[in-house]
Length: 84
Length: 84
DNA sequence: GGAAATTTGTACGTATGTATC
DNA sequence: GGATACATACGTACAAATTTC
Image 1 (cartoon, rainbow over the protein chains, first blue to last red):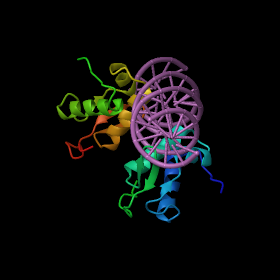
Image 2 (cartoon, helix red, strand yellow):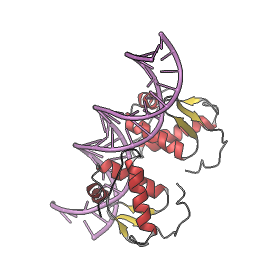
Image 3 (cartoon, rainbow over the protein chains, first blue to last red):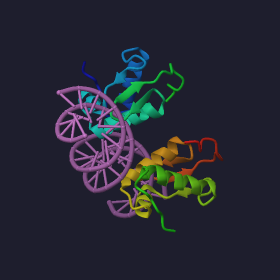
């Protein structure tokens, strides 16, 4: 599952869009854990700080909720602000 | 105008709150430029990346709008989402 | 009870790109 | 061209919370 990221757009936005897509299509069902920062940075081959930014964005978008020590989980809200 | 930042809460949130306060009380009137990332990092003695985070927050909050090469300006919306 | 591993959150510092003046 | 300013990206370090052994 190779991922093509072009460098003409912000990488963190592209990754956020990909993860958001997986949430919407059910790859990551509601309530389940999404890949951690370390896992995301490995999969997309970016720095952990970039993966962290993706998490912060998804969180501010209401798609996920994070709990320190546990992980980040798909929020139970179907979809309202997928607008970003 | 010394600024006391305690380290028990996120520094970037405290600075964001201070800047937001200055916007609300008219210290930074609508349409004017707010301090740049470099200026914020100097005033509050934090890294530029921390000041950048403050900017990103204020921007996502709708309090300011940024323009590359120009600066960051107080948005013309009085107040609606000071909620954060 | 405690040590280790995992995971999010915060903070620092640096480099580069892009746009404006 | 040079100075200024925001945006992106990398890498590192540590704190806090949770789980597992």
